[in-house]
Every structure is written in C-alpha cells, then in structure tokens.
Image (cartoon, rainbow, N blue to C red):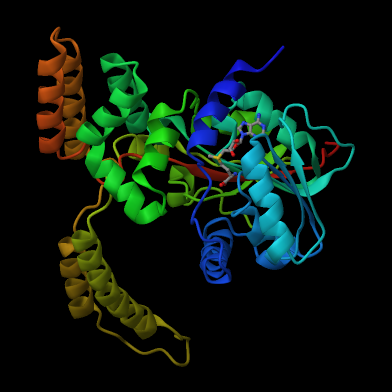
Length: 405
Ligand SMILES: C[S@@+](CC[C@H](N)C(=O)[O-])C[C@H]1O[C@@H](n2cnc3c(N)ncnc32)[C@H](O)[C@@H]1O
C-alpha cells in the first residue's frame, strides 16, 4: 500500500525544500555550518567530535545532506537515506564535491530501506515527526545501532511545539486553501516568521511550507521519548536542554559510582522543562546579568569566609571573626532577584491570552475573527512571542548492552 502521508509531505517538500540552510553550497558557507554544528555537538550534546573518526553513520531522511556533511568532515563514513528525489541528488552532488570519506546516498523511503549492517551513529534530524508513524520511525532507527552506538534524534517535542501546533490549528480553522493559508500565516504570525528567517536562514516561504502547509507534524512529549528510549534499552546520554532535575538540584543521588537504578543507567527528569517550554518566550537578560554580577560578589565573600576558617589545627589554632563577612553575605544574598523556574505570573498571562484566542475562534464571522486575531496576537505579551515555544529538541540515546542482574 502506498504511504499517503509520505506522498502528501513530499508534495510540499518538493515545492519548498525544508533542509536548505543556504542556496549556495560554497566552501565558505559549509565551513560556517560545520563550525556551528561542531560546537553544538560538543557543548550541547556532549559528543566530542573525535568519536566520529572512522565511525559508520546512518542518516535517515538526510534532505540535501547539508547537515550530514559535518559528520563526514568529523571523520564518519556516512550512509544517507532520503525519499525526495531532488534532495537526494543534491545530497549526492554535495558529497561528491566535499566529502572526505566513503559515502552512500540511497533514494528510498526510510521504512523500506533495509540493511544487515549496524552503525556507530544513527541520525534522525527533523524527520520522524513528518512520517506516517513517528514511533515506528524511531524504533526502526534504533535497530540499526551497534551496542554502545549513539542515536542522535532531533524531534519536535509536544510541550515546546504547543504554540506552533496552536498556530496550525488557528489557520486550519479559518481556511483549507493553500494560498489563503500562506496569506493568513503572514498576516497573523509575521513576528514569528521574521524571527525564524533571521535566525534560521531559510526564506519566509520555506518556513511557511515546513511549519504550516506541511500536512504532518506529530510530535512526542519528553515522557514519550523517555519511555521509547527505555523500551529500546537506550540510555538518555544527553540532550540539548539541561534537565531541571529536582533530585539533582537538591543533591540527591550524589553517589560517585552507584547509579540509582542499579544495573541500568539512570534516566533524567524533564518535568520542569515541559512546564517551561509550553509558554516559553525567552529569558530576561537584565535580571540574569544583575544576578551574575551579584553572584560573583557573593562568591568572593564566601571564598573569603571559607579561607578564614581553613587550615586550623590544635597547634595552629587562630581565633577568627566572621560576623562582618556574614552580614555582608546575607545582604547580598537578599539582593538576588528571584528567577522562578515556574514563573506563575507569566504562566497566568499566557493562559489568559490562550483563553482569549479560543474565545475569538468560537465567533461565527470569519472576517471578524481574522481582524480580532490579528489585533489580539499583536497585543499579546506571552503567547506567540519571542521563541514561541520550542520547535525542536535533541536527544542522544546510547544503546546499552543488557546486563545480567
Ligand atoms: C525537515 S527535513 C530534514 C532534513 C535533514 N535531516 C536536515 O536536518 O536538514 C525532513 C526530510 O525527511 C524526508 N523524509 C520524510 N519522510 C521520509 C521517509 N519516509 N523516508 C525518507 N525520507 C523521508 C523529507 O523528504 C525531508 O527531506
């Protein structure tokens, strides 16, 4: 049976390619992309790039290969699978011109791709949520991993994607006509589109097609990703977001060698990340910078206090006075501004704006709805502002050998 979703998604993608980070694949542009990707791998995903040297890497849904070439430059032998014919040709040409290692480009539906080979790395970057079955796609990708192999997954996460999903919902409630969808998305969400263009490098049209015209975006929540990883014996090795893990913040689990779960590697908790990303707009640099200055001062005083009490002994006993230091210390701590992990005020504002949108959507007259939506969204201070939630999350899973307990 033909995969209907695949054909529909491909119709959109063959018109506006979603994986072109620049039109001109010059060495200069590739170098910039390579540097950024390398930093991302090291800083965010904790993957030292020498890990890729002489490795076998499979990229399922590689698009034009502009992302994949970075892995090749880090030393990986890449196998690229892509359904879209034109993208796969562009990927082959890119690799022919710039690759440093052996490679293979396969123009095929990833669900039909078969190999007995196992890989050190499997990459699925912005693909699974566009396929007919996101879970099946992830399960299949993991099957190609060697023991200790790493799965690099870039996926829309349901909480972070909520606002984009709501935008889709608003547009589809107004029209089913593609041209009108394009027009309305520009009218209502121009702030987000301009921001995405500025930071992502794609054209407004490409972003509209990928985000709003695309017939399939089915995201998974943190919880679903975690449970999928667990089921597949995949240890959640890293992610682009640090986890606000309360147990870690409060200092539980401070064992050096023993992990809480015993034989299996421990997983992480994304409870707070879900809560934050739902209404995420961006953080205030002003408060942060003020706090950082203060923290530096506090640290100095604290170091001083610790130094004064250091190196005491029966013979070398010295009486010390700490009153003054402690007083200043207390004063400075008092001045620290609260940065709530859960900022109730912002969340309430977000909910209020959310309610207003649904009120408008319940109106009958289309013209009035569009007019009010435009006005309300413009006035909003949280919903559809700044980052507008989070479009993509990254998870690195390590295939763990099963241990006998
Ligand atoms: C948003 S793009 C991401 C491309 C690339 N991974 C990147 O990071 O730039 C999604 C890609 O997945 C491809 N794709 C979607 N479903 C597929 C399938 N069933 N088999 C192979 N490729 C597929 C699309 O053609 C498209 O090139």
